[in-house]
Length: 484
Image (cartoon, rainbow, N blue to C red; front, top):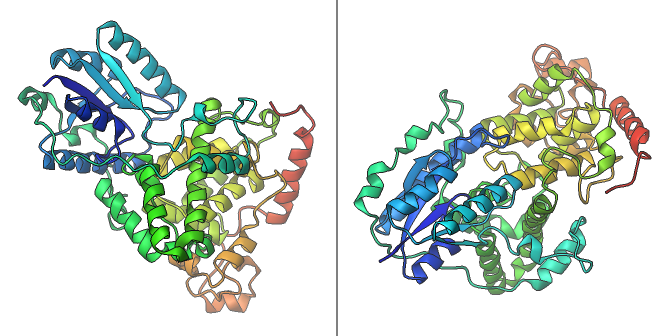
């Protein structure tokens, strides 16, 4: 049979993989290819994502081998490697699933032109979104910038189309293919020091892990998702975000599975709608990234280009990164991030608000730290989340909404379970004081074995005073010019 290259990127799965399925249906011998692009770019995978990628590729290779095929693994510039591999195996087609950031779009456009000039058919597919960004616009054909109307219109257009099945068998690769495939370890994706030890107890990268995680979520957490998802000490969220980011599961697979489950168990319907709305936020983020490609580094709201961020904030940034701000729920979240590569979404908003609004440190600094430390570091979601909290993005919270981390902790971690787990210095603090130990009487601190400034830091910022300063900074720029 004639060969077709299946160029895999953020679609590391066999099920519901349009590029793979279409090639098989067209009668091609698929050659699954992953190219690790070692070109230096601003958004090269961070350390935590590289850990996940290593194990996801290992899982994908195992799945392909179980089907009789294998994964051709190369390293270098796709613009050089793809045409050469296509010629070498006399492939008449190259199939891939689309990506939506500007760098990937520009790369794909150039590659397609080169391949077509060489007489090679190129086809691309949607494998990671419910609808393409250019398929879902407002009536005036401009992009949505507010989530609620975006999701209302999009959810009415969706149907329960069945995800594509994974192939049971695949043709074996030509023997020469695996002779040039490099070893996964050669990519150097795993850390040189053992900071990732805790990752293994929290995650199972790969398609099988994604399916198991979805099943566990439905069985154990979905019913209480609506009421429990804001409480970081509860296992009430799906934690599917890294699996989605690496394409080990598709949003269509999740959508269909949850709809099936709620049809069989009507008690799950409300929670299912609530969760799918969160899936809609991911969709919204990708549509925004496509339509506003400059936003990973620049505010969507042009007024914020003149915002008076602090200078010389290096020490405060380090304290925030290390979970040493003296504000317990913030420190708990930052330590959870460092140890597990993940952070509860409610806590992500709290730590981001402290950085941007109380400390007046540019949101881009937080976005870069999350990019390096999150296993689900996703350019679209990361950009949307940080700009939302900073108040400079689409559908952003009003700038004057400053999360008070003490009140947030008292509301969503009332008994301090989350803080005690990740900030063990405060394990003996009474719940009444655990979210603001600097307010506790001396005798309470003594009984808890805490000396502020020694066992646990004093707060690095006054919350009330810094809130006032943030609002004054906003007042200084809000009349500059209108949004673009």
